[in-house]
Length: 233
Length: 228
Ligand SMILES: Nc1ncnc2c1ncn2[C@@H]1O[C@H](COP(=O)(O)OP(=O)(O)OP(=O)(O)O)[C@@H](O)[C@H]1O
Ligand SMILES: [Mg+2]
Image 1: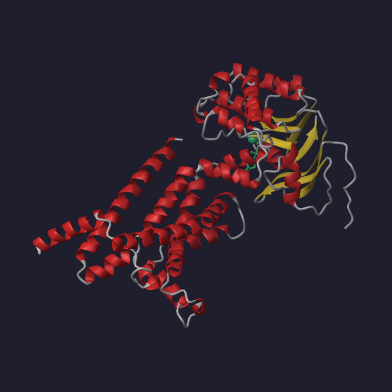
Image 2: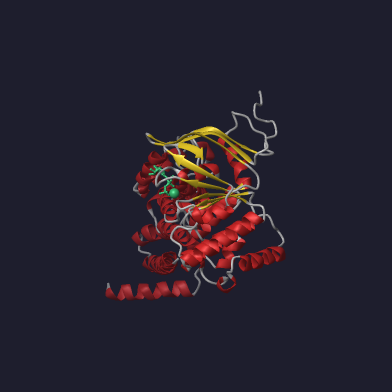
């Protein structure tokens, strides 16, 4: 066992460094699916975070409570929900999305959306109301004032995006149920690790694990930098 | 629809029967006031009488519970939505917080944010230079705005007002927490703004120092606005 583990690690490094096409394809799918999910979710989520922080509208408290609840819904439950919606017999079955990258993107949007809302709400809360009022009273349009306030909260907002990305790229439950781990199509890092390892493909699993670890280091390093900057100003 | 108030009005802004309450507390009730062009007023009243609240309503930052605001040159009628009145107001009024908010970045950057409608960057730069000079901020132009002293922040805020060049400037206790030197400088700058045609409404406690730049005094007392 000791010997096979050592050789598996060695094999993993070889896969990574030699640019093994199958391995890098899986990594590419992970990044493009999760990147797309963040890209779609970030603008509406940040807008909602902004509204929750700066507008006192009817139902605001309920909305905050709903997003906080959604925050703790397990990924497999989100996977299950969208599986039922997207499966052939489900209400959205005609779209034929189940086991496609689009389905994975949808699931990951659902996963990161509450997190993005909650974190950008907090980010905007740390910016005083006076910032918004000052921008408005200096004659900026709503959009102009919004961009000034976003600039004030930029480090905390970037931290929100990084945290959300870190959450969905490593998440296995929803990706498995909605993507189905199909090679060349929907096999991403976490599903490959979970399923291929169980088939004895240790080297690939370890190589992908190393990628996730490195990513975690990079994301945490960036978070550290941004949070430091946010605290300074 | 019958347009009751669409006739041209002579004051810059006509505030009609503004009321505002917080919870059960009525802050002011049926406050009416004609803001005449090129006139400056003081707004006095004891702590908690609602001066800040009234200024925020008058600048379009806070929605009154009822009342009508008619800006000169803008059509108006009693059913006009608050957001329409707000847009008209924000065009002509600027509000200055008691402790001004400065954005992350240098003093220069903060002044740039006060120029909204000048697309030419060379022109913007020139305006910023003039504003720095006007407020005596030349030496501080590169300083991080968040680290300035209270008096320096006040000068940056006044320089922004100078750049913004709105018809009306509402100031919330502009000399509170300032030392003698800064008060004097603030008054000089306010006099200069008034000279250049900006109308002022200044909320304050000690009005003696503002008398030279004042055309009228208003008092907010038990929710009622009176001229004194
Ligand atoms: N957002 C708010 N919610 C509830 N009550 C408020 C709010 N803002 C102000 N008030 C209350 O309204 C009253 C008027 O406040 P305001 O700040 O307008 O008074 P002020 O005349 O400016 O006082 P000061 O001279 O101390 O600055 C106060 O009793 C205050 O507690
Ligand atoms: Mg006040």
